[in-house]
Image (cartoon, rainbow, N blue to C red):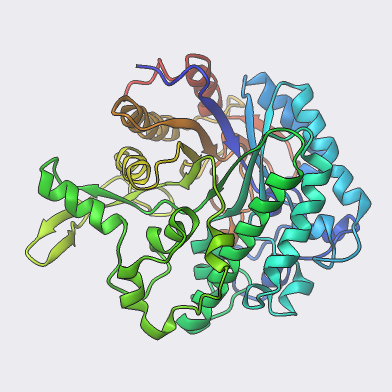
Length: 451
């Protein structure tokens, strides 16, 4: 079966990973610019100063998307490109860049899906506490107003934050990502609460100021749990594990999503987190739980769960399971059970805002890039998502991560996630075999999938 006739097939990217740093075009620096200057934190010693030079080559990139028949592009705005200090004076040329980008996409029949924040916190705001400062929610709302006032007459689809589990957990608890802090769990959760407030205030701004009818969602990590069997006991165990935790971890689906959709932190997590949980002020949850139109989820793999005598139990992966270059296990059923459980709990249409895999791709002697593993991977995952829609999950779209190879955070340029190969020395783009395969998948609305 195919997807619904209005299903959005798209590709995704993020500002810092492709554009080149705003600080070289009159904008400000971000925590990622700061982080990349720290010795040893990026595995190949690189940075996002140039990345894919999308800032100067966006029309070329949009031409490639159009040539592949891709009608939807998930992009993010670089906060310090628009507001070099994170607040105050607007960098007119930085804002004008996104004006041109949106117009150029629409001129090619490509619908932009705009993410307001994909990890590039302005450096100057970090010096004022960043996500630890409650005022950041208002700073983010002010930034959102600038973007919506400029683009809200043309942009229909909006996302507030990308993966708070990562920019809070990896950025402020483990230090693996920018800004590289290693805080106690109490401060980590406080920063997360401020991020949720920023999300809610941004939704309020979009609703109030967009002149084109807006669909709004957000894009958290979808930590998918897969039942070991289809028995009711294992399915119930996987569902319970999806929305509960027994350890002090930021990798809790319900901790982030229950406040957004239900207006409260989950009781099960509050019991585990104890005194580390943030103090919720009067009115906070009303701000955080602004109505959304869709549930975005970034899903790459899942953990298998079975029913145990004392509750859900993790099932070890089989020896020799297929893995990506990140060593992430290949678990296509994550794109069935993740959307299914999220739709059951939150009742919102699902958009897969990221899904894909990192490989080691290169241009072959014939001048092409052959990536059969990516094609096989995507076929299996998208087919699983299609089965979820067949079984009643309302789905709005699927965005492959990513459109092009790019700066892959602490891995630098070692791993390639793109449908389009980028030679970082010459900036030459080469669509891979998977790009042409995905073109056919989108054109057939999923009908050619084999999985």
